Image (cartoon, rainbow, N blue to C red; front, top):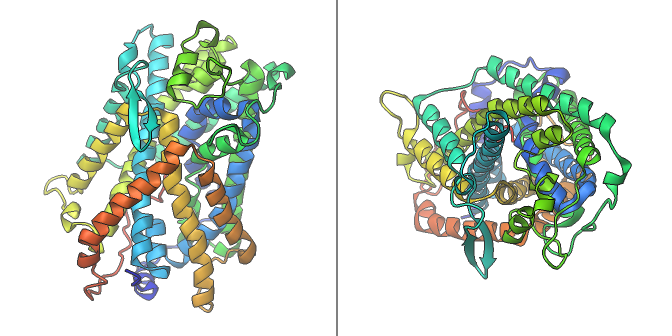
Length: 522
């Protein structure tokens, strides 16, 4: 179980299929901005304000700082092995098959749940547009799934707020069907969507900043730094907001196509993260200053988790109906509240247009993780079966899409984002360890990009990922070990015996030309 997949074999494929180096620092920075800005800022602003109040502005800085050091570690390995498989491939080459399986299994959780979270975020904006723009009253019980709480190790649903999220199912299955047919996105369409997102956020900032009221920032941290329960407070909000930054490794996976990667990769990474952090801060400050961001409380004045039954009950009260924290389309809601309904509807339309492409890339990315693991023999090779007409991996795509739709139908966006973060933080933690181990084991190996101050930044990255994971809500933290336990059972019953490396087969990770840089925008 500690056997490794030779990094030399992985690199041999990459060298045979090396790509033309053409990207400079500006292109890399723009690539990162397009990959990062997505559902996190459009949707999670409400959940973050429920956890931290106006202090969520600090949460964005904390999450961005952890992403920055993790990105530098990720880039070294991505430049050394620019092949499919992401953190799974790196871990296999450095720390062995068992830990690689754990990382790959966590990445499956990350992609699928992130796609579900984006589907729920899209649902919130489309329902808001239907109601406020077209006057369509969608049934309450069909616009959200139940709220969930843990009864020991048993999740318990509460159907008072909703039964099932129909729009989220529609968009998840629709995107899945398009992927099965072989639909891909062109660079031109992606560029247009990036412009749409940036213009929408810029309009929000321009309108809301002049309307700020200083009293809306008091109290600044109503739930404190850590909160009275796990996942609350400024740090708890940072753990959730981490979802808004994932996508930065689109820059790191482009290292092979970058001119002078040692200089340009860190510029692209830090530049895109810095610009997005400033964007996020301005959006957060604009939302807080315009209408306030104070959390709702339970019947005894206690702090309540977003998405919990107590939170839903508090938002059902008339005095809380128009609060930011209770909105499923936070930014459009703010604009409507400050008497810019047309701009709010336009921002909702922008989210409506841009977010399905994110779902597509997430589901696409997960099928490729499944592919690489199946190609290594750790999962059944039948998952890689290609449709005779569509020429796509239709079995694994359909399976993934159905799972995404079920999760989107039954869980709120904040809980889904936290669960996705648990898998992401674990994978980035392993990458931070892998880059240090490889520096010791193979110090002379060629590194197109070397993480600067490795013995400072890599430990900071590992510690930061562990710190944010620890500050996720209890339920989200429990999902990872439960999911991991299921994965270990599958590994020891199947993968351990069927592994190509274990059986002495000499396949090499292929560099799939059609694989997008995972994870995509969130």
